[in-house]
Image 1 (cartoon, rainbow, N blue to C red):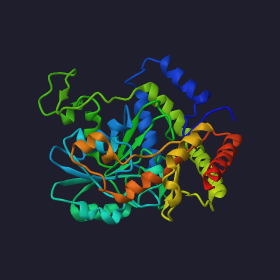
Image 2: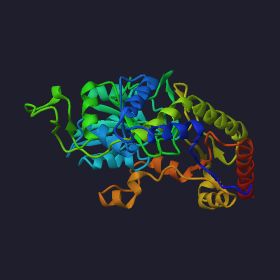
Image 3: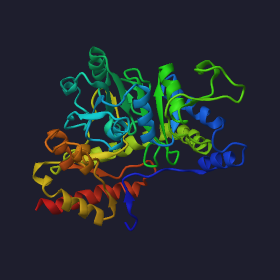
Image 4: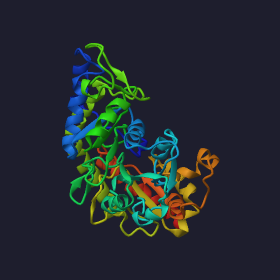
Length: 386
């Protein structure tokens, strides 16, 4: 196969293009009615009361932490196996991430270890539904309730996933859930993100945070109104606003989400069948409480192949497979090392990183591409078996 197969790819069709063009021809291309329409559709899909859209998943995380009261001097517990944004968003507020080790099979935070990480400074727990497989969030909620903490679900991998039969994003066991709409995610708005919540006060803070800390609602004013033009900046917010163009694309994409998830699960099933008894690596698991939406398909090398990961990875790339590694443990990055974090902090996470390779998986994959991935993976690993 001559074509390079990336690990993830967006799917845009004629309906998506028409939706965007219709907005471009309308009176509103930025702060118009489509934003609210998309937010309501997203909240309805997930079963939450409120959704607020942002210009990225990172800004959505920043907003969620702020709205739940995370501030300078606080600590928050999270996983090291995530993109750096999960932890960075707390640093933006002057809080310190406390990293908790993971389950070796799912890559998710190990809920049994969370409580021992809690200190008097701990304000919230931020869990990541790694690769689209939900964390056992009911257990996390029970810990949080005992200790008076907030819970954030970083669900940037998990739109369309189910936990105990309920959609991730319902916020049944959390105070806020964050999604990303980056092109490799389940739906795309080019760039973008959202926070879902069932709390009205959290919802209002999110709306203000994305718009410089400004409110235009008379009932929320702290001073007497000067007139119908009046608005107030009540805290230091940011320009994290979403646009009508993005919302129009999001609405069109959301209609296709069930198909996208079904295709992802179908491809994962084909991989599982092809690789189930591999002597070279472990395939992803799916716990009985979870229905994964398979943002990514991550294999984990068995012991005797760990030391040859780099060779295997480069060989797969040479055969035009856009494999990737998700993720370098956050605290191993130089910036976090400069903050005092050190190797050995989460040994299971570090071992997971040494083993993990992400294979291509996206809804528009053709049968021949899937077959090529399977064939090439078998052939490359067979080379390293001798």
